[in-house]
Image (cartoon, rainbow, N blue to C red; front, side):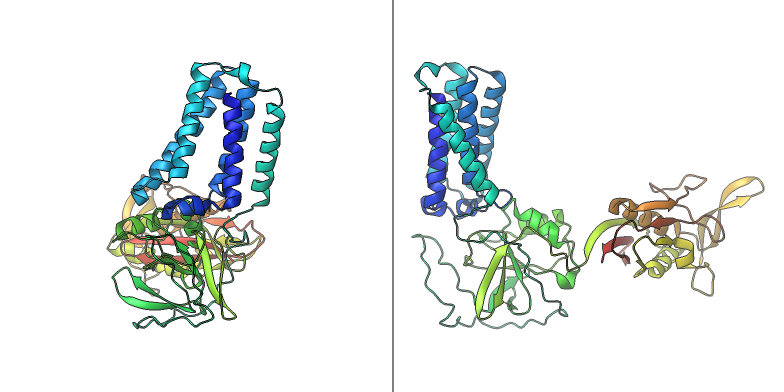
Length: 451
């Protein structure tokens, strides 16, 4: 009986997906669950889970491992339902019914054996449902109407565009098609080539979808994190517009926390008032041949540079910071070809007063041993250290590395000395790697970009 119940839930999940999940759920957030996990709708993952649960409960009677599997699935469903409630302050009736049914079946399996009521054909039916759900998940069907395609339409590489504060132009008759809406919900916006948004400071302006693609995300959307982390690997000028949708009031704190977790702390973002004419988030939208195009936002185009390693170190103020920043400028923009070896000393050169270096604290060799003293170029070991950290993060091959002879106040220290110790690494990739180094406040940041 328990097995039959799970198989019925699997069948209902497939039917619910086929008939259109959004039509059975009135919640804004719940509609976004159609995006699901790995671009597969949650409802199909549910069909797979219920079919698996049905086969397990039909095969194993009162089994602890099966009970743990069922309990984990039920707890996950509870968590997802709570997440929707927190975001929308409402619960989807369909989701709640599936949750209650799953909870009852789990309790029935744990506390009572109903196996004598299970017809003999059920395992075969369960296997059939499992195969159907696996096929649907493998093919990547999404009944919301959006295509499962590479998400990043080529972003046009332009100089940072100028924006002006103007009112919304009404979209042309070609694009202002009336869309069906659920009573009580905001009517989806009709996008033209230019879309009115607001900056984080509340200023109204327009973004031009002819010039650049826009990434539509939401602050409450967990699978938007992956898309945001992907675009953090672009140069800032190559990134799409980042547009937050489905906002309920001022959510800037949540938005900025989400961007920070995706390494986009300083990225520009925009806020869209009203619902976009898309099937879910994250979604890429752009304007092409007089029409709005959209695609899934899960892949990074290989035609742009990718960030493969990043590190930063505090250099503070004073002469040591001057030397560190100066040597950082020397390595900034350095390109290492495939198989090439980077040498810190060869790139930075001799540290002399004529080249702008000043006296600062460093470790020197004396007849009595190593000691701390002031010397021209002291402090540049912070530059070699942060470069070393970025190289390790990128998975490149270290060729030469030395640690200081005396303790220093930073980890993974990398000592260099003109005419002596050097720091070297090899580019083991099949494409060139470029070093980007910049001083931000009292920190030195090094990024390694794959060309």
